[in-house]
Image (cartoon, rainbow, N blue to C red):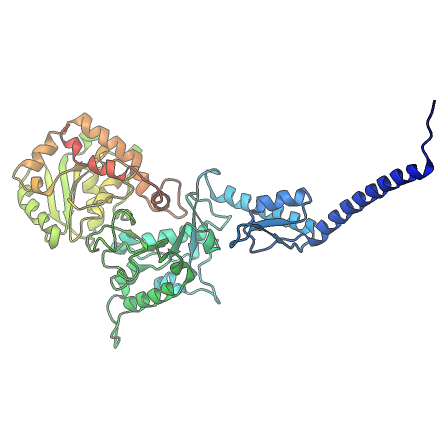
Length: 490
């Protein structure tokens, strides 16, 4: 038996169902239409591009970010058509990948993101005589022959500022293949550190004395300008300069500005002329000198038997402060038959003679001078002559990852000046022990080479890595304790 529903009841139930379906369909169409017309990419948005691309692909109509006051999401109106956003995101991602593939050796390697101020050329390459065409701030990296060169002689040992600046510029050039520890970013809010491209060592070496009728030197004028510039920047004010990186490798560079900029991270040769509240091993970076002598290839390095001189030193003998020990050692070693201890300079072919002498010696002395550090340590490393470090206050580059006791001999100053102590110690080191240190020298010597373009693991790359590691605990204290421990074994 079939029951027939009254028409009045049927119409009441069917009509609302149809109306509801129509309303749902209309709402969906309205939502899609709104999505396409409202979608846009806000240039100041904090939403990552990868998230935006996900939203675009899934036809979402809005994206949200937290309200800084309430923590609740805020709907941000979108403007640009979806196909324009999708095309732009894909193109930018492809360009980023292309640049990384061309510039970086390891795709997944952590990058130190560096923002570099576009300071006028008078602070950097202008000090080398470079004059850009038009309003150019930086030289064209695509023409290697026209890159301004750093002056030779003793200037070169403190040229770190030059190599770091070139490397940052190259990080944005897809035509330059380089190490991949740091990359320059254009937005300071994205940066881990802010780099100050002032060639302070060159400024001191060339312009620290007033010229003509000047009462104040150009070096001091530039430092005062730099302090004023930095103190007025929002980047400096944001963290009080704590995330800024200033290169002051020459011990006398930044002499007038160092206290005013003491909250920044310095790249230094040592801490000899800095009070601890301005510069210290906890916040600052020790960078190697650029060696003066010619580096020896590992395959050409003379072994133990082909190095007839036991210990070698050539340089300035009469120094002040901690360097007075050089004079004492001179009188102790000058008459030893297998020791070379003589005065020398860069003049009269001195650098070439020193390189030849070091490469034919088993041990090379690195003695404190006017400050704890000396370029001779890095000349010794370049010639694979086992360094003998006699400098109680020295700090060493990259010591948080390099154990210098594996390739150096450390002698306390109080022991070194005892008659017979130093030569007896060195003569007690047998061939196998020396060879082990020599082999290690050949392995690590590339870490102390400055290159343009930079290479993975070279001095430039290692400095950036050190800056990056300053953000976390390291093995620095462990390796510093090892300096004298191996003497017991020897």
